[in-house]
Length: 279
Image (cartoon, rainbow, N blue to C red):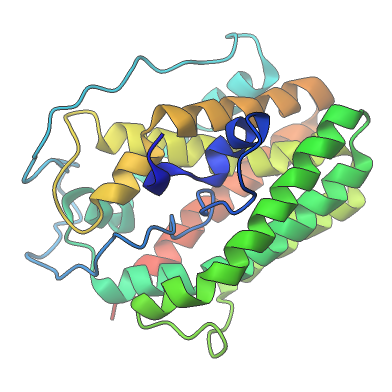
């Protein structure tokens, strides 16, 4: 496993072999990778054009066939029921700019600036779920995830500085606040299964986007590592692990449907907010 692809998404694998708790953010909005260089827009983005994100390909590396949960699993059904929102995120101009490398640096810098707020909220939410987990396995997993996030937050300021972001001066945007408030409220007020359903869309959506953008090979531009990270087998494995907690702890209900869809809406709006920050 390459160091630059170590993310919270494969944290369970790292934990299993006793590696360090310092983990690079993956579910975080910036995919913290110090090797990603700031981009310079090379052409206008046509918001009506289909995604053709494979300019300047340098490799045709083939991704392994995607794994999946059983078709009748709750997590699978929730994901399938929200394909409209998945497609809205995939077609968002922010994602399309990541796809072909034309995303303005200011948009990605804003994306990075919001990451600290998200990471802090997610760490708190994980802590709450750990306490509520009905078995020791769940407690250990979510507790370990909190430790990884704390380690990442310690390194986050230096990474943000590379994108010209001062986390001390950054303020949480409306879309960020909406998402973090939702995660914390759900983790605090609901049982572990409901909280897991609120967290799972982040992982599945980013895996989906990464795999879609890498279908024809990894492009060569400033955001190549972002695509490589989220299309990786390690990312897929972590996503499946998180979805397994939904299947284990949650039961089908209108509430589960609601929190899953709301999280998907928050993800879509997060991308849109970053795109609107480009000017």
